Image (cartoon, rainbow over all chains, first blue to last red; front, side):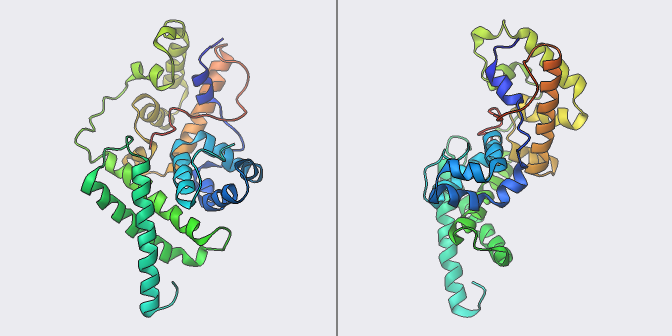
Length: 79
Length: 204
């Protein structure tokens, strides 16, 4: 059995993951929710987006950038 | 913004200034992950802001007030920056790629050099699964992103595809590889739970 946790993480997929198109379509709503409430609340309301942001680097980067532009610190709200 | 005349022009000018600030800030935030600097960075920021403004004016009727207008508008600038950096990747003279860099894979996936010998069998099984179990498209995308380290948004440009389509290809490839490795006793349990695509993260 493997002791290569990064590989296990890399290969793990989440059935809730909505993909890039859906995540980006509501990214502005998600970001404002993070800023007006909490990252946990945003993830609770949009679990498929949260799952996607955990898995997709480019979309997570866009999320961090939009969160920063809209007034919040990067890194919150992905789970 | 939907009106005409000088009031509209003034609103568009104000919005453009905001978008330009966001684009510049976003390019600076990503410094170290792209080679764009100086006047070229500012030019890219202007291009991103201009294209974002065009997209916003074309889609203004789609804004439904679910977020602040500025957050909705800034999204266009951020996405334009991503897309432009993806295209810029192939313009760099230094972009000379060696394909099939399997020896880079352990490092890309966070394996320490001391653990390399211990995981040699798993690495060989992974390579076998990539070569034998993935479809041609899955293999091509997997090798480009994971083995050769091409950013996803740059691969989108090269293949004339979309981020969503290539992400889906990778998603299916990851699930298939995990199932194969689990079936052969290299990994525990079925696929599921929170994901973590670290080697693709920060690749744009």
